[in-house]
Image (cartoon, rainbow, N blue to C red):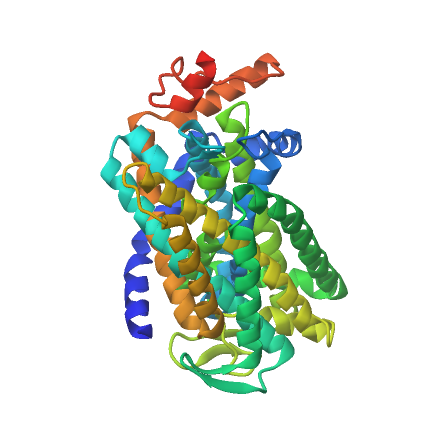
Amino acid sequence: MQDIVNTVSGLIWSNALIGLCLGAGLFFSVLTRFVQVRMFGEMWRLLLSGKSSERGISTFQALSVSLSGRVGTGNIAGVAAAIGFGGPGAVFWMWVVAFLGASTAYVESALGQIYKEVDGDQYRGGPAYYIEKAMGQKWYAWIFAIATIIATGLLLPGVQSNSIGNAAEVAFGAEHMVDTALGTLSVTKIVTAIGVVTALGFIIFGGVKRIAHFTQIVVPFMALAYVIMAVAIVALNISALPDVIALIMKDAFTPMAGLGAAIGWGVKRGVYSNEAGQGTGPHAAAAAEVQHPAQQGLVQAFSVYIDTLFVCSATAFMILITGAYNVHDGSAGFLIQNLPADIQANSPAFTQFALERVIPGVGKPFVAIALFFFAFTTLLAYYYIAETNVAYIRRSIKVPGAMTILKIALMTSVFYGAVKTANLAWGLGDIGVGLMAWLNIIGIIIIFFMAKPALKALRDYEAQRKAGVTDYSFDPAALGIKNADFWQNRNGK
């Protein structure tokens, strides 16, 4: 099974996809005149000014929901894997894909807002919706929707819960083992899996509003606490910081693990972590209540910075400044070995050992607790994304009990992932991320050449901002944007 997963993942995550992620980010950066730099101040203003409504969540809640998807195990275990397999230079390429990917995040999230719909008492939207309406290809939208349901409902949840289980085992031990139908498992992992599934079920059966309220409290708190801990670790080792930065920059271009490994792992784990271009962010973006689609696009671009430049960098500096990492040579050996050979790079262990070296007795459980909140809120975001795509399909085909089936399938995946090996879980997760990225990035590029809706929305927003308006408006017909039914109906009313 592992060999099959590795083969499929290798085919999907070929150099072509890595080039597509970087190329799309550069393409949209140039065309938006580096909106991720020019509008940085506006991103901050928008972040704090939005309000919710009966149907839509606030700008900040939408950011929290999307951050709950972006900030997850990729920020702890994913960074460790990038360093472990790609060398310290992979961190630089994670920064590159985040900087360029912020423009991609603007485009896809603005599209999510432009083409959103009203579904009962909430807004719905995402790549399936804008592919159908802007590209006019319903079959392609269906392929994306099905791929996303499989990815976020079955493949990706196991990665998050796997890291929770592994972190708990490192922190609290695995002395007591029991034989089960799934193999010999530690009691720690079984108890952890049951606890996560129970808490997850309670929230996902409560709907998107409960998810939004939970994440807007937990996500900022956990991210801030984690970054503060990282800053403390760096401060205690401040004399080593210049050498660590020099190591990252030097290894980015003369990498110990090979240039392909550094770029490949940096981009792969960067996209996995910040999700720019993957197509997950537009789902939360579409649910926000905003005056203009560009506003949510800008806020979602800022979330990429928070994810990679803050949280991922915090993890990388902790690992590198304490020397708590190994670098694999691509076979069974090591280019650098500072930890025991049986420590998996595809796990949160590097980060746990990094903190343990500075704060003995506290580091391992702290990372386990932080990872629980990181990964748990990501599971909530995955459910919401999968639910949105099931809702999209149900517009055409009524499937009795579809949402209940989805909830049970996701909870099963979470339990299975929590008790199984890390490499298998990450391999399945990479397949899910890769499929979504291929479909979504190709889709938004085609849409750009067909109509440029996200760019037109940005220019319109900048024109109104320059004119000094206080209440923004969006008229898709005046901009030559077709099938933006929600905004046309709002203007009509």
